[in-house]
Length: 88
Image (cartoon, rainbow, N blue to C red; front, side):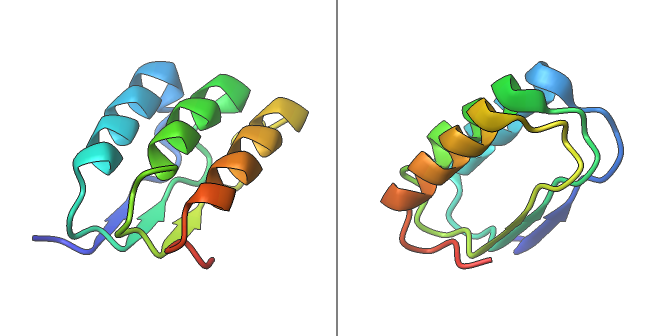
């Protein structure tokens, strides 16, 4: 199993966010996820945030430069209130 996934600057968009979220929902080994510059926007981050609520393996998440607004930040913050493993 792998522990780190770097997906930078590939414009994942909503469909990519759904794929990442599905992976996080079933993840048992990934501890670090790097998603910088992927045009996720608020909707994409909200999809990933929902998966973070129940993921118990991920420790680090970098999600900068994804056109986040208030709604995306709110979704991420709410999800991280339920997640006890992400610490950066």
